Image (cartoon, rainbow, N blue to C red; front, side, top):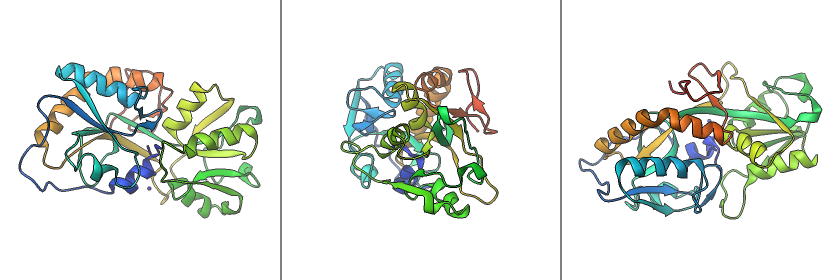
Length: 280
């Protein structure tokens, strides 16, 4: 499988792994503040200026709960969960793959996937890495992400240009750099996590076109449900967050679309308006 996704989902899966079990019988959530674990430099998800969509969702929930919003900042790389949520410094991670390890996850509040991104002027939009049009193209990919497995499957690794997966986001932004390299002509196609592709194409006014990659038979998952993560002991807290998600789902979906985040419904069909249901 990849904020993550820097946000690609694969990075999150590598950090968080697979489903966890509750190991404690007590709730450890602060009763006086809405405490969020977040990356200080990981747009479009979060930053320490409050500019990411996860920051905005946190603000909505804190206001609903009538609690002050407080952050614990840590780069979303190796050690993120251990040094934030599990260290009891905060009580929720706003964006995790459903079923992540080291925690339990809430109801998903959006679904998205990996995309192929090309220059709009090239008039190509490959949704499958088996498309013959990709032969001879220089293809940017985040190392060890699901699309990299498909490049191997289709014999395209010779054309691949790898970008780092686990980085300190305060210093590097490989997925954003990949998009800039695409505009500059250094690569011909970029395989990017949807929220990053959609946000930067919109925010930076990049002349690029993004297309969801289609799921291949027996291939790695390319689309993922995104939820919130809490400690395995905090069952009541998870129920509270589930109620908040349900109450504000339409507002959240509208917010994601405003950030350019490409969304999928349960059938992996694109969502274009806030009234649609993104969850499975």
